[in-house]
Length: 209
Ligand code: TYD
Image (cartoon, rainbow, N blue to C red; front, side, top):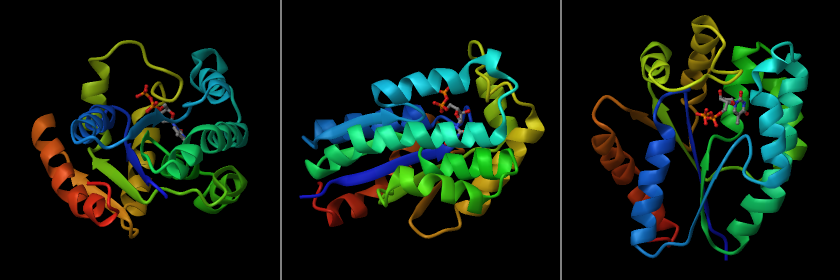
């Protein structure tokens, strides 16, 4: 039995974590076994790598070091959490996955998608999302939401031009197949309905619902 792997992606402050929670609650109410997880992190060692990556005192981190650390965290996460859950037939809802590396390190840090892809190949080991939900909120709007929140981490502290490059990357990459692009113009509840409607056929087709 194999489960279903769904990743949520988007700019910092786009509301993807809330949407992931809404979907998880909907699935759990329908007795679907769900694993909620996040990147960077999701397993003990990966959470330690997350602390390194997001620590503001590591402001001078080299871009390649950063890309390798995200991939190292992902290698742990795939092997310890994601793949075992999928093998048990569960639905894995992951807050960010490899698309974030393409957008942030590939575009934001200008390493290029090909280098980031090769760094990540041994980390993901072909364990890729069945579906990626991209919450399409432009960075200036996402920034407004984010600025209302508490302290910013190392990545969030990057300027608007970095986040614009990241967003252009996401937009470019979201044209790929297998990607569900959601224009989050309405309330968070309206966005949840849109996501649900787009995912229902996929969930039914996979025998999850
Ligand atoms: P996230 O957990 O979404 O931040 P928060 O919980 O504060 O909303 O992600 C942390 C940061 O890591 C975010 O700015 C995006 C960045 N990131 C990358 O640069 N590359 C990656 O591969 C991943 C997964 C995240």
